[in-house]
Image 1 (cartoon, rainbow, N blue to C red):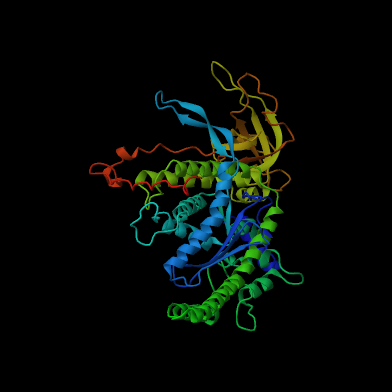
Image 2: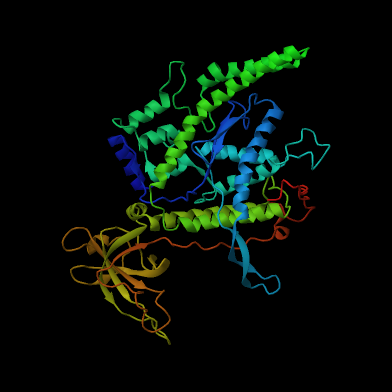
Length: 554
């Protein structure tokens, strides 16, 4: 957490209102996201109780499992969920646009550009909290290997036809959510917490109602008071007025309302099964229907407040202007979505239960690279985020006071102008360190030469111990930083117009790189050492691909 975030939290505690930690929105929001508010049974990992699903805030679809321990009812719930989610996914998979991608030519080994299809948009799934993301990943893992009756007529407990396909997509959404900056699957509490700081802990921020109370409290109330009411206020029956759905439930709800309702449902179902004639079966069917409706009403009661809160949070986020580099990260999400669509259509097997060593290392390297890229892009897009990097000594901003043209020594002299920047920041610089500024959306590099004494004009190297000697004569603590521009000036002897700063320009330089470099290429699985699952020894046969059915083709 940056110093800016700490200061914002302290100010939130002092004022009773959440404080902004960003001036722009750093995550992509689709015009038509699919919102999922799940509810699970306490003590039953992955046993769904119900969900509100949909893209229309005024007309959500309610899905309920009257008895979560019943396998057939759970499969029916998942089949209904697939009927809602897969058409939304398939609609985005059908709309494509031409694009270019760089690939390695197998014959020449050179990198060449090839024309491919790229989905024009990608689906976006939004859940209330981080626990919802974990549940999506858990459901995907439990569903993608299920066999259907069409694939294997002799399989016990066959799953409905489209359940395995939904599991593959949920797994992809869950894996993509682990990539920093991705927006395919968003936990709303995480996104709101990125843009506002509250006066409570990060764990308490996972309660969506309390988080929104800090950000947008009711009129005449402070955020702290509203958040306390959202967490603790109960009605005359002892039930929370703001239930923490998505997917946790309140013990008072489980014990006083849900458990008796499920018990009545079980009794009605047992009585229906024991009916001996048609008249008795009709009466008992009515009791079963009433018990099921009661459970549906209870599930809707605890999920609807969270549903409304999700859309309220989306409205708050949409009020922020989108960051300049958000669209670039969303394009990478579209490539990821298109790639998985192609794998599904090609009949490839589901994602494995465990990644091999090379795949796991590639995923880890990609996530580390994307994390560094995200931190750099957020700072470049947002002055408030950049202020945090400046406070930590990772960047500095100031005014150009002097520009001296100089050239590199050699057979072909290249321009290497010396730029003096007056700054109030205290960056951690040493001789030869490279700094970067954004020039036309591309990073321009410069080398740190030293600090120039504002009184005598004597440049000297800064190795940390002499920083105090280079303060401005007016005593305001400013320093004069001398930099040597080293690239992005064209190939001629004279720099291109606009490539060299001019006196009076306000510039911001960073000590971190704007673009992340790729790491070393990992060996192929066949060349992986035996210590990491490779040869020698017999290789484990890959799991066979599921038979492609009509439901699998997008």
